[in-house]
Image 1 (spheres, rainbow, N blue to C red):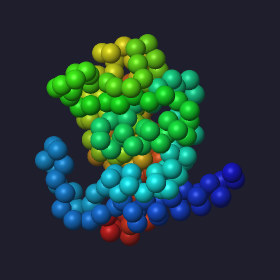
Image 2: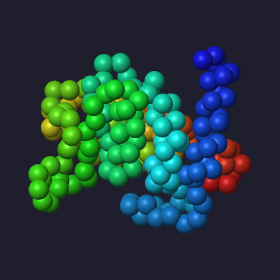
Image 3: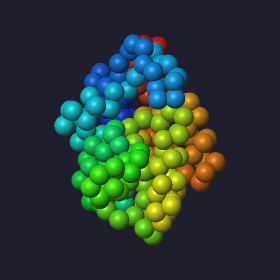
Length: 185
């Protein structure tokens, strides 16, 4: 795809994402921070064509040599399934806490020990959740140096992850979304 065609495709996808998944209102994050806009990953996951198109757009971002894609509950799970289908790479699923029953696992799906794992999540803000999951994967023996997300909001996540040896690659940044440029979200 040529650079202008690629830019047009990215702008079109950004517009569809903004229309479908960007909502305004008062939203309190787990760390207590309050935002006046929110990227609703469930709206993205609920739209099969948009989810497919996002995965196709993210597939070229997966670093060469990657062996496993790991999705973080809950927003990263549908993304990692779609990205796994788009790339042919196996998937693992990360719980924030080990399951309290059954297998009592924190990492489900494809084994990660000794493998190059790429983290996948919906939105990166402060990076705390990705950092915690990086630790979990590294303790399990995975080699983690990359993370992908659909949307990066500039709240320090990239720097936090880089300081811990993880490169963050977003499909889009907040300023790529049409409503962000217009100050609406």
